[in-house]
Structures are given as structure tokens and as C-alpha cells.
Image 1 (cartoon, rainbow, N blue to C red):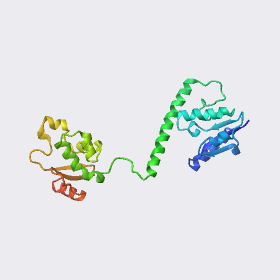
Image 2: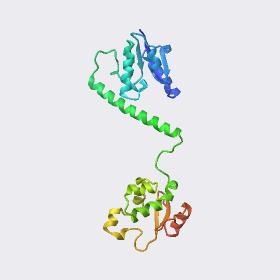
Image 3: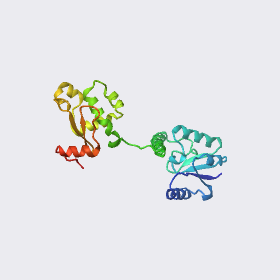
Length: 240
């Protein structure tokens, strides 16, 4: 019978040293502490009566409650036990846990697993070279003219308009909000609110801290520098 410790390998060296100290303070011999990506090697080293000690539920290397249950089953089949230093409810040496505490612990564990899976997913996306977050103004500038013209001049749904313009609905409503432009339902009630009505063929809009001009006809969308210069000639000062 022996207490054996397990720590996850994918953490910083400083944090790893701190966790090793925590296990040693719990009377785990240094030579009995195994550091690996998953707890599988530690489980395979267990003999009947051994106790596998982890610092917290996060160190169990499980991505879900189901995976944790599988780990507990693997440990039990070897006649060994699993114990967490930070979560006393996880101690299979005890005959029956306090189920109210167990439910709270499992709920916290599931939240922790969700965060862990989200971080892993974001890391995977970044490694593939994909940029996260909303589109920058430069990437959406060429579609803004088509987007606004279609929004006010066609009968298509907003979803279809945004899909054809390769822009998101969030971008459309952000542009409307930043420029105080009316929504479609307002234009339907009062057609004079249409920014392209009354012979107006040019619309000056601001997106974030830049300005551009959009014409009522397709094919005329100024470059960023030209748009900002034109906006200044019309008496507008870009906000910083």
C-alpha cells in the first residue's frame, strides 16, 4: 500500500513546482509523483490498496463527468483509491460521501470542464491561423455599400441581405446604431426617413473611427482615405 501522486504535464514550470510541493506536504514521496499528460500511466502503476492522490479535480485529466466516472472505474478495478486534496468529497476510501457536497462539487467540475474545452478549442483555432473576433472594417468595407442599399431598397429578408453581402447582422445593426439610421420598420411607416429618398444619392456613414461615402447606385464605394477626406470636406470630423 502506497500513496502515489499525479500531476498534469501541460502547466508552467513554476506552477508545477508549487503543485509538487503541495503533494509532498500531503506526505507523498517525491519519487512516487508521476507527471504526465493523462492519468493513465499513474493508474497502470497502481496496486491493490494504493491511493492515487491528485491536487484537484482539474488534475484528473478528464474532460467531462463521464470521463471522471471512467477514471474512477479504472482505479476501482485495480483495488485502489482516488483522492483529491482540494476536493475532500472525492475520496473513494470513504464509504459514502455527503451527496449535497458531491452535487456542488460535480457542478463546479462540469463548469471547469466547459472552460477547459473552450480554451482548448480556441487554441486549436489559433494554431490553424484563423483570426477570432468580429471582422475588421477593412474586410467589410467593400460590402457595406451593397449591404445598406439592399437593406433600404430591396424586399429581401435581413438574413438574406447579410448573406449576399458577406456581412454579419451584427455589423449591419452596428452601422445603423453608430449613424443613427432608421430601422426598416420605421422607414415603412415614414418613407421620408429612408436615407436614399428625396433625391439623395450619397450617404455618409461612420463605422467605428472611420468614415466612408456610399452612393445609391452600386459600384461606387470610396477607399478609406478618400472616404475620410470626403467626410471632412462635408464638415465631419472623425472621432478618435
